[in-house]
Length: 416
Image (tube, rainbow, N blue to C red; front, side):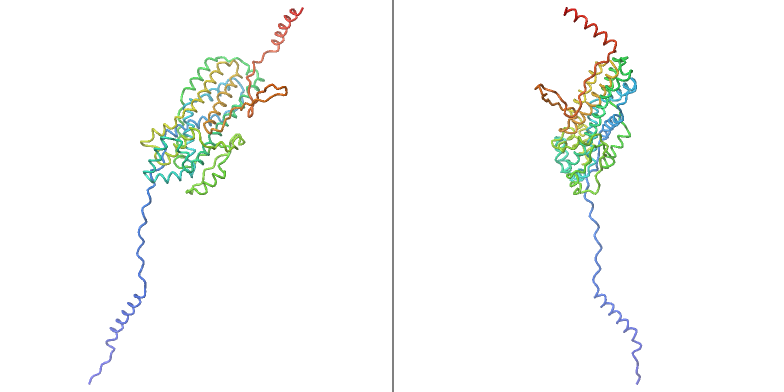
C-alpha cells in the first residue's frame, strides 16, 4: 500500500484561501464616491459696462475749463494780465459747458458701487434690462428710484456744487480786487481797444472748445471700471445713509472717496441739498450712468444716450451770464472795470449756474432781505454775501477843487 501526503495540494489551498479573504475584505469596504459633476455654467452677466465716447469727450471739456478756472487767482499786476484772464475765463460756449457738466456728472455717478451692483443685477436679464432702458429714455427722472441712485446722486451733487462754489468764491475775490487795484495807477488807465476786446470775447463765447483727448481717455476708463475718479468735494460721503447702504451693497469694491479740497465746507452742511426731486441735469446724469452700467450705452442706443445731455435750463443760465458779460464790457472804460466784469459775470455767474444745476436747494447768489431801521425806513441787506457796487472812476484832486469852486460861486450870487 502506498500513502501520499497533502503537501502537493498546499499551494492551491493557500491560493484559494487568499482569494476568499480578499473577497471578504472587499465586501467590508464601502463603494468609492462617483466623481463630482462639472460646475454649472456661470449665469449670463449681460453686456459689459459701456459708455459712449461722446460722453467722455463732453466731460473732458467741462473738466478742463473748471481746472483752468481753479488756477486763476485774484492777483492783477498790469493791464495785460486783466485781458489774459478775461480771455481765459470767457472761453466757453454755454451749451457745450452745460452738456459737459452733465456728462461729467454721469461719470461721477458711475463711481458709486451700490448703484453699479444693483444695475448689474438687471443686466443679466434681457427682458428686465430692455424694459428699464426704455423707461429711462422716456423719463430720465425714473433713474432716481433705482436702488443706490440716492448715493450716486449725492456724489454728483457734491461734485458739481463744489465746482460751482469754487468759481463763485474766486469771482468774489476778483470783484474785491476791482477795489484794491485802484491803488495802482495802471488800473485807472483807459482801455485802448474796447471794441476789439468785446468782439474777441463774443467770438470766444460762441466757439466750442476742443476735446482734451488725454482727459477724455482718463474719464472713460474711470466710467468703465467704476474707480479712479476723485472729485473736488467740500464734504465726504460718510453720512449714515451712505455708510449703511455701502455696508449692505452686494459688492466687494470699496466706495471711491471724495477729495476734501473744497472751498467752503460750511455751505454744504445742509441735507436739503440732496433732497428729491433732483434737478433735470442730475436726473439726466443718473439716467446716462444707469444705461451705461447696464451695458446699453453704445451701439444702437448711443445717439439717444448722447441726446440726454441736452438739458435746457443750464444753457439758458450760462447764456444769460454771457449776455451780462458783454453788457458789462461794453460799459467799461478802465482796466479795473474789466476786473469787475471778470469776477462777476464770468466767475460768479458761471459758478452760480453750475450750483443751480447741482441742486434745487443751492443758490450761491446773495439773498436779499429787507430790514427796518430805527426810524421805520427800509434797509436792503444781503444775507450771505457782500454786495458789490461798481465804483465811480477816481477823479483827480485838482479837478474836484475846481468843480467845487465853480458850483459855490453861483450859489453866492443867488443868495445876494
